[in-house]
Image (cartoon, rainbow, N blue to C red; front, side, top):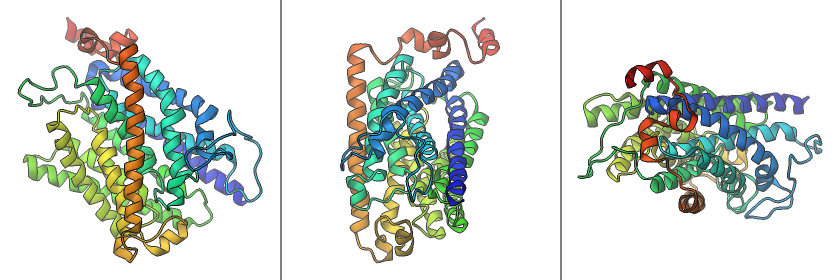
Length: 420
């Protein structure tokens, strides 16, 4: 009875997380230009398919394989023994696989922000294979699969580090190697504003992600028997997102003189990303504080990357990277001893008598996982750049990836009118 109930709850969580891909399609397509909208949407489905097969073949095994060590899981490849449920299991292995697969696909979607509007479709294919086979599974094993950071008590309940920082570091490697989009920066270093073509799409995308995030965080409880606990995690998720949205909107209003909708949307995402690590470890008042700080961090980091001439069209480095760092560190400040004991990971944070120990573990995880994800991503993309090339030609970029990579526009009527 309990196994079935847990299975239903976890599968619902997996469905919600997979549904988040709809949010990424809307957000990324809306935040980029019309001539690339179809490409942005289509490659999401394409890469989710790749991640699914690669994760089934080796990715899941590299995280949870029974023959692994502190650095890498090993064994149980190609779907593992899917129909065998071990004694004392909380959830069936097939359900857990789908749940974990949905997380890997989200991390991949975060990474694509750094590729947007200028990367070859072939690069998406190759990098998706290697990311889902090597980069994501290694980080996930270190923290969730019994790896060396798990042994140190690293707290990351639903993936501020595992999912979001890992994807953001891959995005950083991509945007550094791809260089800025044509026309993004002037010779004197000033930036040109390149607005996305549909702010309503972007807004709807964020709301779809917000809804799906309950599968992300509350679904990570895995067990459904204690309804009060997953409800508590869901409450913290909601409060964190709300704090991020409000703080980012107010800060942008103060700094820019206008209440910027894009900043508000990224503030909501930043709040969600930040609370993802700590949603099961902190009290609800702290969830609001974490979200508010995330909203401030995302606005400031967006401005920082713009000044550094790092062209990040979807703001993945800010909403997922900077917010992921803050969210991970927040455990080392706000984790309560009671909740740490309930989850069974790590210790209390600095503000609850735990000293600097948990904060140090959290910082160690950020440095180790971030450095690994960035270095391996950069290495893979550097090799691809020197061999097959990773960026489309100037002519293809000007025409748009819809036409140059797929032979048709996402908005054929509008684009035809514009070209006449």
